[in-house]
Image 1 (cartoon, chains in turn orange, cyan):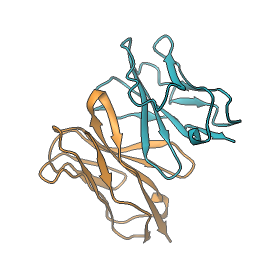
Image 2 (image 1 turned 90 degrees about the vertical axis):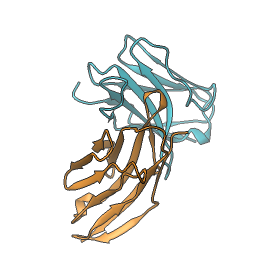
Image 3 (image 1 turned 45 degrees about the horizontal axis):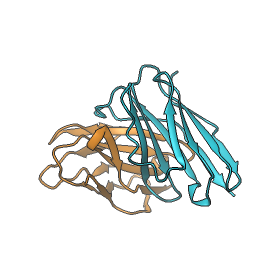
Image 4 (image 1 turned 30 degrees about the vertical axis):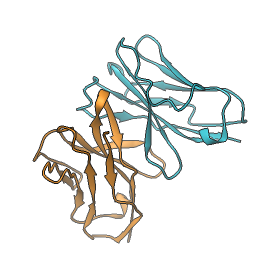
Length: 111
Length: 115
């Protein structure tokens, strides 16, 4: 079935460090792919998306490239801030117009 | 409204009681979704409404769970005879249409605690 696997957290890093969160999806077709972010005490927000192969989604300094050859959509940011501390969810479009989410990765950025 | 509104934000109920959770989607969004987020877990799909079509109920975990959407707008998720394992954050989301290429806009959720 349609599934998403992302690296487990927590990921702890220092301010200005490079962040990568791995995400892979099951290769049924070429689904739209998403990253959502959940800041402490808040709801999920769409961070970025890519709708076809080789597309790059970007927002707030975060980037992710749709790689169909590796069925991956890894999230990256070159220099994280304390305010980036949150839980990040990778998601793919699934059958029946639903989104299937990964388990979430908690990121903690220390000053 | 400007965003997806959910109420109540917190609900504590006794085991065996019924609860109703409300979702008010963004005006004009035809697609509405309910998900459940248990402590430390990912998001579990519950139910999906698209316009006037029959809802996709494939994610409802038991017949104690039901949902309706009146007039293509407000939705209510009902849990009957609540159990402790129902404790979770219940998230509602809406989308412009059912293609999901736009992604979802989520509400802040209802935190349900069954004691």
